[in-house]
Image (cartoon, rainbow, N blue to C red; front, side):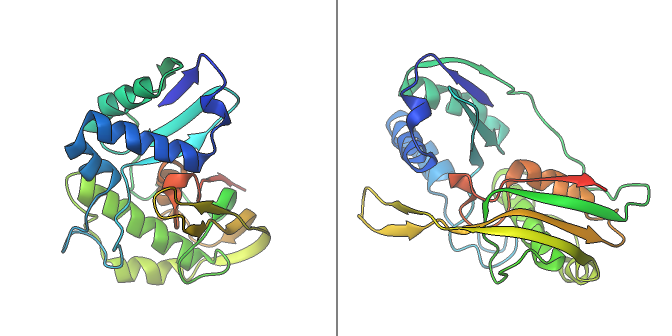
Length: 238
């Protein structure tokens, strides 16, 4: 969903400020929806472990001046987010709210090399660099958890075997820059780091199984704090 502003005030908000405003507006409109979509609880037994703080069903995608993108992963929440943005005021129109379907079936042709662009600061748990095994494991876990919380079910697959196959893909180029940033919680006054890396990495191997997951991650993001705009990626075959 891409919202177009009629005035510049919203466009001047940082992703952190905007996220806070979205949460406050959602809480005013629908407290139950706020609990489900903005402050979700862990779902024991549904998806991989390690998500003490479950992912939200959306990510912010700040765009050009006077525009904001929001990728929403629960179809039922689309009208709600339209109401939330209207509550914030100065929204002129909304476009791009059509349903997008990404198949996770392996590509039926050989793909040997890809280049991944890390467009916003990306932070992968347990990995300082985006080795392919770590990157695809984090994407797999995020997609599965989003499906468990907001879709029909988690991924029906052998997680360990998938991760082991991803480890066989070699990173052949890595050009990264470290980004250091932080946010301050309005409620607690605590400062939270928003660090990560940007840049690109190239990979080589039997990639047909993994390219659909990279395509999904274009929309979901990958890594920590994606709801604030971190972990946005794109990719291309080379």
